[in-house]
Length: 392
Image (tube, rainbow, N blue to C red):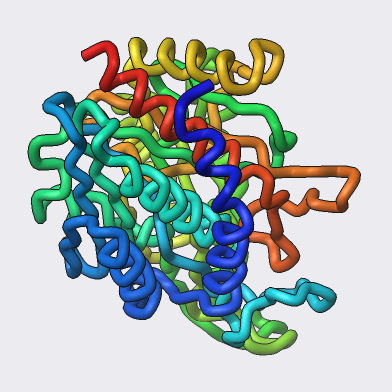
């Protein structure tokens, strides 16, 4: 329990309206111009100090409390994804073709706006300050967190918290873990250059599709035979493109994929192994190649003491039986950059509801959330901030 619970309940319907408006009007990473204006205008209307254009389209709000104390930052992301919304029976479906809030960022933004509204109305009761981080471009590396930090978003901040509404977990439950929580997501693209020719005369060619097929198999040996089974690691080839006709051997072929790790040294080792395996596989068939390997966000590493705070605050709000230590999550998050600079905790709030058919995973064209999860997320974030202020 905390002193803002009733206030949040009172603005719940408004929070839902904001979320549905943003869901109807999504904007892609690095294009969140109107979303940022929407956020900034609301913050200003509540008397919150606002900076816009922070590191790009980021918005930072500062709420000064009534008495001296720590400064706690709360973060929400604002960007959508290049996915066609297929919720045809939904009154708040996306109005923009090929763009959709398929990861819950519309709800994250609305949740943080609700927190800003209720705390600004009773700011004199805060022992410390709140910083509201509305971040652009979480979905695309290098992400907005890094540039916002470089632009001073964490200046004078003592701790930072964030949540992700998560449909694989049921509404009413909350999750996190101390230490490594979410993986470092890297990506790679490999262009294999062979020698094209007639499908009936393969001996006169260097078959790039055949070589790419061998390479896919060989890359799978990294995790199964070259990584300690105790370590968590994923190497997935997600796309392969080559050839134009059934009777033509393709001159070139491109495959792309992702690597997910928690261990920084393993991350570098896997990158080196991909290079060696690609070189050897192509050399066997006298093909050349180009490897483009992009390091993604660092691993999300929660502060151990802040994870303990989550357990205490979550139990008080939701009951001990609804507070869980999450398994490691192989998805990535650029909240990791904030945690490299300040102690804090990233938390998952259950947003799925089987009984209501809210079961689709993130980045799915029919993705949706149980909107009650926003109220849970708001209570959790405020609870973490208040507990930090009271004990530091």
